[in-house]
Every structure is written in C-alpha cells, then in structure tokens.
Image: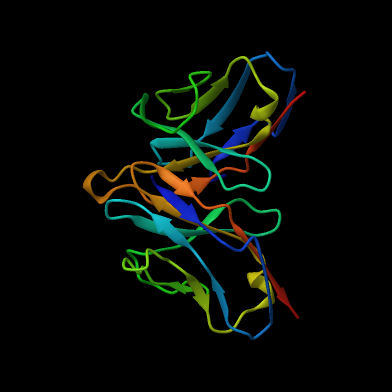
Length: 116
Length: 106
C-alpha cells in the first residue's frame, strides 16, 4: 500500500488561473480531508469529503471547491488564483468508524503550488 | 474561538536531557487532542492522541483541562527526535498549531 498519494508534486500557476489537485486515499479509507499549509505555518483545514459529499468546511472562500469520486479519491479545485494561495496542499485520509469517530489521519506528501 | 497555540517555534535540547513541547488550546467543548510529527523529508504522521493515554517513542502527553494544555514530554531526548512537532485539536474541524521545530544536540 503506497499510502496516500497526491499529484502533481509541484505546480506553478499564474494569478487568475484555475488549478486542480488530486488525492488517492490509503487503501480502505473512505474519508478525505484537504489542508493548506503556508510557509512557517501549521496545516489549515479546508474541507472534508465523505460519501462523495462535503461534510465539513473550514474558513476558506468558495473559490476552493472539491469533489470525491466513488472510489474515494478526491480533487481540490481552486479558481481565480491569488498570490496568497501559494502553499503546500496536503491531503489526509481516514476511515470513518461511525460513533467511534475518525481520528488517525494519514497524510500525503503534498502538492506545492506556486502562484506567480 | 477554537485555537491551538504552540508558543515555541524553535526548541533545542541536548541528547539525554528532558524535553517538553508546549501546547495550549481554546475550545468550548470536550476536545480531542493530538500530537503530529514530521521528520525530515517525511510526511506528517500521528505521534499520539490523548484518548489513548499511551507512550509512543518515549513521548507522553497529558490533557490538562484546567490549564487547557496538552504538553508533549520525553524524559531523555534522542537525536532521532529532531523533527517538527504539531499539536492539533479535533473540534468541529481539525485545528493545527504552528508547530515547534525540535533539535536534539548530540
């Protein structure tokens, strides 16, 4: 099991463009969360997908949207890119255990997005 | 407001010395607290969580609701402990602190 995989590794975009980042969860996991990590900061929660629906959302504008596919993989889309969107984008997967909650997140290596 | 504060960005200790990485939180409900670690050139991974009350790699962390703290401790630091450590809270979403970079000096 390769664990959580993300693509691409690095990406350079121009301000105003749109970008799509991809994530494949760890085998057996059904829940995917996305985080933005700016330089020198901790990861900031963007949103979480479960059963192809957005279940939770952090304090990010609507320019940030996502999708989860039937195979549990996920995409993060960012429209109208701003310079401030430059960051490492992390994907994390978990297995929803219902009442037990979902706690152990497995993180991917991240996608480094640079907006110029 | 829900918040996780790690007051030290950098922390250096000598090998064999005790180490404590501080974490304070703000949350109105009953929080789930975690410590995550990122070793050089590796991905972020879970170190321990408060509900497990276990010791991982010699590290322990006790949730102190009175002081709203979840400090990470190890009695004798090892060189391989050098890494970035993040405290995190699972409330209505996951909140991470800004991290503490720990360097263990040989």
